Image (cartoon, rainbow over the protein chains, first blue to last red):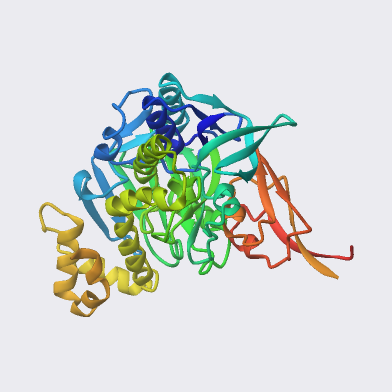
Length: 386
Length: 63
């Protein structure tokens, strides 16, 4: 019998496992895929602060450092943000294949058991415990636990089994594909973002430099898209990087619904994409997933100590993640809904209205400039800036 | 005739996007294998729209 079973060995699951194990809990982390970190479903960007809060950066899993972000309007007008102003996703570009394994190793070093190629297929409440059915290479068996931490990604089954309704609507999800491209020309010191309804309806195209080549990907909102994200990305790539070669091709979905009401149920806490913790504007999720994993670990420890696994007790976890970043998710969701309504002409005009000589550009400075020139917009997005 | 969703395995990247939008719990990833349970799928096709690979489609079937 375990204290905690963590489903999913991404950054959220591994930090949760590590946190629990360090406090002496019996932890099992299961990963359905046979390789932790593969296939990558991520642009791999994270800010330096967000990463260093949990791990010391190592050359092995930092693919590249960048100094800022270049953002392009639909007509190509460019603005440049320095790293510390560019938000949660700019600073390091990770090698997730290595990073995720490194975090799993930290969890394992702390005493957590780790099983790969193992799917948690069903869950059954049994008094105040949960019986988890595991499936590995065709063989099924049951394990019991006091707490389940669902770190099982955008496709979370844990949420569904325990009645936490996280089903996404077509305007609450970004459908994404990404190429790792070589033989392309770009400024390797910057993450790049291209905006516009014609390029990526309800999303954007990104380029994140790596040690070899760059992640070039796209997210589109299915409620607005007229074709698949791959078709949009191929259009973009054929215009911009016609000589580029694709050496890796991945796909995925990012939840952009913003703050959910609760990420707990009796015996259960959800972290990361399973709890829809990704940023609705940027789609970034690693930073929040690691924070959530840490908070869930702390609360799991308290719950085991108290012998209370009720949703009522576990709501402490809700409070922790909501106070830290939940309200920000809600704000970003409101802003996103304004942004996706903007047509390309409006976006172009806004970019043109930002003076080239603004000096140290920050998101705040840009937004203030925009409002000086487009006061009508102010009302719409005031929640976000103030 | 009823409608159900089928997967083109040559296109599926087993990313789980379809699972995130299905309110009928009709799909599941076991390792890297997407299962669609046709007794639960009602053929609404919401997953078809979210699939980044264009790997899903709604078909009519007689059984």
